[in-house]
Every structure is written in C-alpha cells, then in structure tokens.
Image (tube, rainbow, N blue to C red; front, top):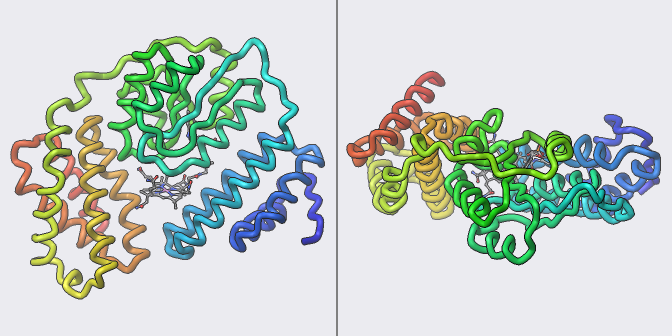
Length: 349
Ligand code: B12
C-alpha cells in the first residue's frame, strides 16, 4: 500500500481505514495509525475519532445484514490490531504518580470488548496504570482478581442492557471487596440511569469523560447505593427459573399462529430459538431494573435486525409478546412491560 501520510483525521483517512477493515487487511490500518501519530495527531483522537467510529460502522454493517459475522469478526480483529499498534507506539507514556490503578472489565456475557479496550488505552495515555481483563468477566473471578491485585477502581463496561443483572452482581461484589466502581457503556441506559439504580459509584458516557472525571476526583470513593425498592428481588429470579418453560410455550404458540415458521430451515429455526431466548432475557433484565425502557429498547434494536434478515418482525414480535401474557399472570412487572412493548410495536404498524 502507498504510504498514506495523513496529517489529520480527514474523510480520506477514514475511508482508507474503513477499506482496510472491509478487506480485513491489517497492514494498511496499522500503517495509517502509525502515520497519523508520526504526524502529530494525538493518540486519543486516533482512538476516539478514527478507530471507535469505524468499529461502530462495522457493527452497523453486520446488523444491516450487509456483512456476515465472518466479515464483522475479521474487521473487528483489524480494529484490535490498530489499537495494539497504537499502544505499542505510545508505550513511553509514563504513569502519573498522583493517580493509581484502574482495572477495566466487561460484564459477564459481554462480547463487545473493543470499547473497554479503547477506554483502557485512553486512561493509560492520561497517566493511569491500567489492567484490561477483556470480554466476558464473571463476577466471582473478578473479585478474586481484585483481592489479589488491590486496584483503586474497577471500570465496568456494559454495552447490552440485557446484562444489567450481571452488572449488578459485579458492582455489588466489587464494592463489598472495598473497590469502587465506575460504570460506562450504553447498556447502563440514557445518562447512565441504570448505573445509578444498580448503585455504581461513578458513571461516564465515554473514555475522555471518564479520564476527566477520574483526574478531578482521584482517589475515587465508595458513594453509590443500589435502589433496592426498584430492583426486583422476587419476580426476576422467578422469570429466570421459568425461562425454559416460557420458551417452549412461545415456540408452540408460534408454530400454530406464525405461518412463516413452518417453512423454516433448521438454521432459521435455531436462530429463532436463540432470538426468543434473548427476548426473554431482555424482559427479565427489564423486570430486574424496574424500567420498561430496557424492554422497548430491545424491541427497537430487534425490529431492524430481524427485518434485515427477512423476518416479518413486527408481526412475529407482537405474536410473541401476546403469547407471553398468558403464562405470566403472577408477574405484574413482566405483564406491565409486555403491554408497554405491545404499545410500542402497535405504534409501528
Ligand atoms: C460493534 C458492535 C457489535 C459487534 C461486536 C464486536 C466486538 N467483538 O466488539 C457484534 C456484531 C459482534 C455485536 C454483537 C451484538 N450486539 Co452489538 N453493537 C455493536 C455496535 C455497532 C458498536 C459497538 C462498538 O464497539 N463501538 C465502538 C466503541 C469504541 O465506540 P463507543 O461505543 O462509542 O465507545 C465508548 C462507549 O461505549 C464508552 N464505554 C464503553 N464501555 C465503557 C466502560 C466505562 C467504565 C466507561 C467510562 C465508558 C465505556 O466508552 C467508549 C470509548 O469512548 C453497537 C451500536 C453502537 N453504534 O454503539 C451495537 C450494540 C451495542 N449491539 C447491540 C446488540 C443487541 C448486539 C447483539 C445482542 C445482537 C444479536 N442479536 O446477537 C450481539 C451481542 C453480543 C454479545 N453477547 O456481547 C445493541 C445493544 C442494545 C441494547 N439495548 O442492549 C447495540 C447498541 C446496537 C443497537 N442499537 O441495537 N455488536
């Protein structure tokens, strides 16, 4: 590839990076990043102004069914290589002795690892000592790690609202181990509303904001308390326990009333079972935090995703939600959130 000496984050630079992702070609992506750094573009701008938006486009292409999972994974890998190259090129940045150590982790079941990785690099560039624990971190293992390494803070990434119950477990257990928690990622809702419900000590929307906040309030303190009146301690576990029965019930109903399903290939059938399981998990998470916006937010992302895959989404989801009303007479919150969901779908018709 020709040496693409970008001096700023121009559209041309972004196009070159996007092309490298589309072609799953690591070399031009890495070369571009190193050239930008050589030309004086701040590394934080490269992370947040080039690599982050390109990764958002990668996911959106997958969601629109323009890219297969394989293309998405290959492109994500190139973004990871670009971050790794930037980290190596900026390794001379020394920790600021007035600051301390942040452990960055993703919630259990969370595979969107790049946002947390980018956060790690931004914090490092701003003088924090960092440890990145990657995707999918079960609470128990994280707590053992905290006991062993004693960091000053856990930065917890949650991109999916469905993982809020697991995020609560991490927040609660890290705090019990004496470590304050900074929450971040769109999974915590608009302005981090659910980070507060779960009792997180701090919240920031993005990496730059997080670095500003921590620098201004270092060392971080334990201040958060969960909103226990709102968190569901009975209905949520009951829904989780009943998941297999509810799934079977909806599948039976759909077989009867959703004609499209009788022509499904085994792969389509598997995908449907997975989608329905996901719907139940979002409903449970919605019940857990006591806010139907978790469930309607799920519908908002599911409708275009299913439509792009050729599924009559609004009809299929409406039938599913109606079918769930019957077996849930003893779950007042779930019923309320299902009606909210049906109202939301009704507005799309
Ligand atoms: C890329 C992507 C994917 C890729 C992930 C590849 C990978 N290995 O990372 C793939 C295609 C695999 C994927 C899968 C899924 N995804 Co996805 N994905 C995205 C997408 C498009 C971009 C996320 C991203 O990486 N952005 C790049 C980062 C660097 O940019 P950023 O998010 O602005 O980063 C900042 C903040 O997130 C924040 N931040 C993040 N963590 C933290 C932590 C702390 C402490 C702080 C302070 C800040 C912070 O700081 C970052 C840096 O400034 C988003 C939509 C979007 N536009 O954000 C959906 C999105 C997150 N995905 C979504 C969904 C639903 C899914 C799936 C469930 C889809 C499905 N039906 O299977 C799966 C679940 C996978 C799993 N179990 O984790 C939904 C979540 C909706 C919800 N309400 O929960 C979103 C919002 C899309 C949407 N609107 O529907 N996804």
